Image (cartoon, rainbow, N blue to C red; front, side, top):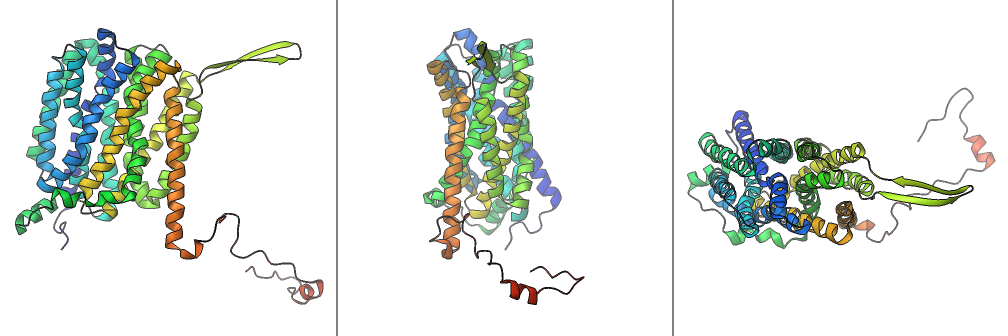
Amino acid sequence: MDQRAGISRGEQNRALAYSTISFTACFAVWTIFSIIGVRIKQQLGLSETEFGLLVATPVLTGSVSRILLGVWTEQFGGRRIFSIQMLLTAVACFLLSKAETYEMFLLAALGVGLAGGSFIVGVAYVSRWFEKERQGTALGIFGAGNVGAAVTNFGAPFLVLAFGWQETARIYAAVLAIVAVAFFLLTKEDPAQMARRKSGSKAASALNQLEPLKHLQVWRFATYYFFVFGAFVALASWLPRYYVGAYDLPLATAGMLAATYALPASVFRALGGWMSDRWGARAIMYLTFLVSLVCLFVLSYPETSYVVSGIKGPIAFSFGVSLPVFVMLTVVLGFVMSLGKAAVYKHIPVYYPEHVGSVGGLVGMIGGLGGFVLPIAFGALNDITGVWTSCFMLMFLIVAVSTMWMHVAIRRMEARKYPALMGERFLSDVPDRPFPAPAPADESSASAAPAGRIAPAE
């Protein structure tokens, strides 16, 4: 029996709207260190590596917690788990304002990181309300809550300048607590949870929920998400510092320019869900990776000066990415990453409808770990190489490897689906049937069409 029977379109939209608002608030809190971290770095005199670790620490908790939160959501329902998770994060965000040492900041950052776990709770909750044909679009709209990163990059610098970073953390904590209470009061249990409660049946055990994780396909989806989401989180947190250091911009300007990246990387996720429903997630992933490779290749090229021997003497010239071009490329990069995020999660409720929490939790965890590892790597590469664009070089390498693995995996899947292709090695070069040889002159004249008429095309 369809658990969604009797669910109105209004109830579906209400669950989606409140979940998206809550996720937006959580994501804004999750990326708060991208702004207040710059002030903390100046206050404590942190190195680039220490700053990268501080920015990345919330991402660690938000990533690792996703499997547990996903399983708990399947067992106890998203309404309760989402509300509890937001309240705990609000407490941690308030305690952040009391930190004084680097170690205390890292500990507080671990608590703030619970905000990142909200994603899988919302995915499991929202997917229960929608039929398969509309899940891609619905999850894309929900995922647009990533715009919370743009909210922080745009609004937090002004709060820091007006009130200080401590008061900014307290404001964030208060807003998240209000959203948590409102979500619990204004939403209902999802259809699966209500059906289970009426029938008196028990939820699947945690072990059964984790059963699909042994499939390589799940881990391949997770690898894609390492870039489209992990690199998004990392870059959204890193760009304010990049603009301040590489282009010598003030913090408020750097935050607004970083928001121009985070905004399309968030709001167009809904478009990515619709495109995945319409043309298939595979095509959207190819689009994401190929455009990303082009953007990252240009972004990774450092400011370089050349001197060549000309006819009349040395000729000096230089190459570098100007600020307007840099901003434009990051906007394009953010746009295709938003499409890719939706495309990855389009697969999960279709392939694993009864394990959305656990499978989505693993995929989200690996993606989130990208958001933890990459800022640290960015800082370390800056310290080691002294080249600002080294972060884009690393991301270019990640996308190149992911694209090759995806293409090889797809070709193998096609070969298994069509066994006749198993022996082929150069499918793009070998036609099904060679073009026929021209007919002899006498035959061609005999079969020619009568004058004044055109022979029909085959």
